[in-house]
Length: 473
Ligand code: MN
Ligand code: MN
Image 1 (cartoon, rainbow, N blue to C red):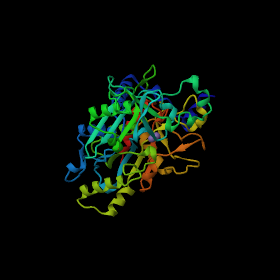
Image 2 (cartoon, rainbow, N blue to C red; image 1 turned 135 degrees about the vertical axis):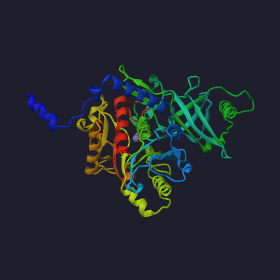
Image 3 (cartoon, rainbow, N blue to C red; image 1 turned 30 degrees about the vertical axis):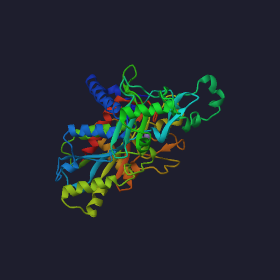
Image 4 (tube, helix red, strand yellow; image 1 turned 45 degrees about the horizontal axis):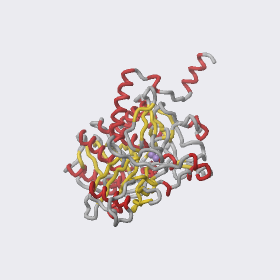
């Protein structure tokens, strides 16, 4: 190939490159510093409740106030709303009239995990231990959750309404919990003949919690009662209190650098807290946007966006009505509709990175790779885009323009080969409100596993990309 041909190829072709090649030392330092802040956030945000708590701290440090603290809203005001500790909206009011719409980045802060059943605690007398029964949440490969240290996070609410927050397994001095898999010596038949989804079955996801009996002759279930005694001494709760609780079992420990070059971050629940954190950081760096910049965190995406904290609820409508009311002093449905029609959104969610050992599930030309920047996913869904979001060409062109004008590296992807599988995000629920929306996140390896991996370069540019979109005209 002559030199001219090669120029022609780069002029006419589209081929995203590894962005580390272009990154100078100074930029690398910035990228690593951003990743460090993110690692701190992710390590202390193991549940949707904690993600909201940590985010509220960041918002308040950056002069955002709860909407109840404002009598009226005007350009430049920084405001947030929290719904039931699990979903959040934060905005910087724009210079343009509010009915001109918002630039939105919406993501989700729930993540696959194991939840405790309502009556989780039991004693196995033959095995001489007490265990907790679980019901998994979201799409997990169950075999990945055994033989790995687990922590418990969550809230128990007593009958009188008093909340009791519990976190065990994160402090190095804390004990951790574990689900023990069967040893290889005895699993050839038992598990060897099962198919992958059933190598570990849902009812086998039982967590070891204790092994010592209570010192009381009259008690029948001595180990179980000992657990109840320990819980009562420490938290003042009873077995019945566990029926009104949300206790989530998640991988224990902090997330950390991956690779000799430390170019990646491994940890639990990058999906989708990486998009949530990046959009929040982007919002805190915006002062006087043209349009109102709005960041949304939803719950329940991993189980279909249902419920009053999920994206399929009226939470966004409530947010809009509250913003309008405080901005205009009045509220009417017509203005509300116009504000929705004029809004533009990014559904911030992660994309499956090309897995080097399983490339054949991807169409390589339409897959994303770690370190090649943000991923624009024009359409989602499965089995012929079914139940997905498909962004309009005009809208994707606008996004390309924003990214190209601001030197944001980007690539495109779809979720695997045609008919290989598929999935969706919160995008379609925003589209239902007549908002233009497209999925944009970064590639991830090991999605929904206890230790997902992202590239620090992608992470850095994710925040940059979101910031440029949020403050776009
Ligand atoms: Mn997910
Ligand atoms: Mn997701």
